[in-house]
Image (cartoon, rainbow, N blue to C red):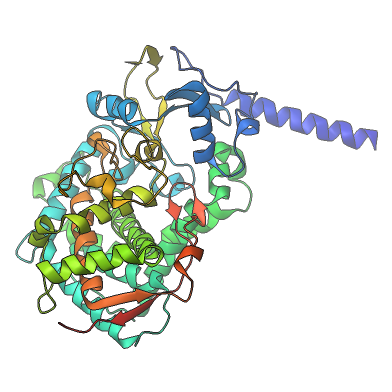
Length: 479
């Protein structure tokens, strides 16, 4: 018995030594933070509800900039609107590096526009912007594509005849079809088996990536990767999605500049193209569809807000033509509600990790080249000096005394700076057109009383995943 205990102790000691050797040697002068333990880092000081709760608690003690050890590695956490803007806007170039997300790194491995760095990232960013411009903003502009998809959705919702529905399927279908239209040049029928499988994989992966187990994996990936867990299912899912998009990538390779294809230094190799398209699917499908899910849950929770939006729709658009993007300027209340949905949903509470590209002075500290930086976007979206009631859903946060939509520096749901989400423009158009088209044609209802509707996310990690709910889409009478 004693021998087995000694052997176990020796094994654990050896494991700790091996892991400690992999600990990066921090130089410079990092911000203060909770004191770490060898190998464990700050695990024992973490909130059991996840990284976000932990970071917000540490912010109260250490201020807006502090260091946390995620397992053996130091990460600089930046909270608050001013500090995030100082880093990502005022020092945009040096903070433009991209750090890894452990649970998806085995798939991306630094490829694709989201996770690439240096010249590779700059080339892929230009390519992605050009792709969205040429395929999304060309002859059949993105607005027209979204309007067509919105009408397809209306017809599909009419078939439900007011029965209770899970909105996940509908909102995933319409947002995925917009990306398919940009990437593949076509949309899919909502019942297409291959399309349904894609939606299932995207949704399941987003939930798993946001889970508590994936957050734990972020701390100890070098050790946990050898054991079963959600990371293996995520890898399997993303590999299957890559098979789905592979054929389209091959077709698009033919449209690249011949100088790029013949240049051995070109960044447009097969791996980068596939990973860039995969990034577009996640950025363009999951984020917008999840925002819509939160939005309509909030409409069920606050029916008086829904009624006021519909009144504005009736006054500005009427019931006999589809909503258009030009209508937004005449619909300040609806625009403010959509802004507040994005703020309140807090979809990506901890922005995708950054990395400094060289030794950097920031707020009196020295961040060595390669230091990981986590901008906590949630801390800005809930900052009381920018939002009067940050924990309440209140469209007045985005309206001035005259009822005009006002800009707010703390509003950064797509992040800010050089790494801002490339799909921001398309996402904003989608949210307005889908939201107004649905409420133009339908009222919404739930068997759950508004006061009993729970808004608590079912998962809160890389993303906030709204709770499951069912909703009725009841056709409105045309005026």
